[in-house]
Image (cartoon, rainbow, N blue to C red; front, side, top):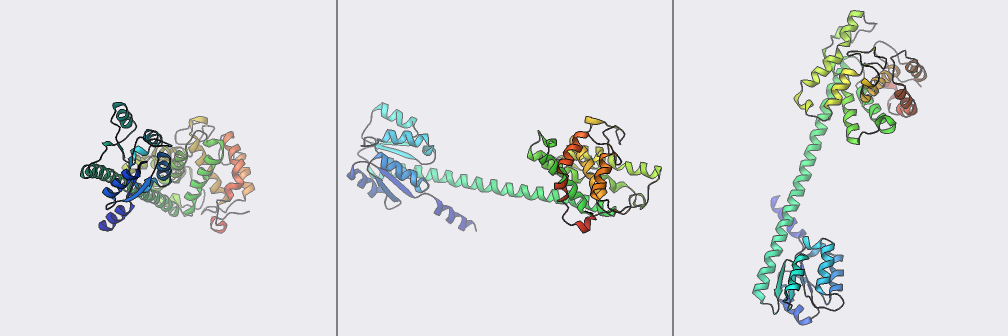
Length: 370
């Protein structure tokens, strides 16, 4: 496998030297020096050389460039290569009879790798140019390896994210099954929360990444129910005041549970998950629990999950009730029969409610009535 990789990398390396010189004899001399190791391209002036280089930069491993040429001279070619950033990618050698300080200084300032004076000494020019070509190839191999490793690290990170997401969904779904409800409830809460943040003004100021973290956090809103006794959690009838007080503790139990999971605390969704688990039963009028928060003391994401939870509970069949018709459920939400909500939240919710119904893929399983 490693040998195959090396062969593939070698095949991908540029293997052509471009000789740009108006003197046919000079081109022939350089061709004779390098043709046994490299493919050779020739250009009789800077303009033709530039065109060849721009057409296929990926196959050129070095440019041997004369200074004094018609149409476009070597310094002008260097300037254009420098502007395009090509002198960082392809080594350029000035092979010239010009030895003036000004020419040399300008050439080096434009990114030329070396200046070789004519007449050339074959074994010297061959050694100097081969060494630099190999250096550039080694740098490219290293760059390719680093890019490959970065891709692998990214893929591994994505797998970890997906695994974490799967574990979060599995835990939350298990709790829903324990309470006798469909496991799709947590997925719908996720989707409703995400949709409202993406398609209403409630999501203003939030990045797409933040919205995704909030939607993931919404899945864990009822994680504290794991601490509620089955006799209360699955009771088909109305809870007694004492039982309801026990049920209310799932908000605190959920927040406490999330705090005790080290991996969760390091997740970017943690602060949203903690807030939602603790505060998704707070009310706009301050009569919710556990902290009696009111109005904008309640975060917008906790408010959205609260409404999403009520909406889904009303239009879905539960162990203690049949599903309400959608219009009846909306009337109950708007008139305060199922809690008191932020008027702005209700306005945004009603704007997209018909689209939210489309999130319910399996009407029979959800008990949704049209």
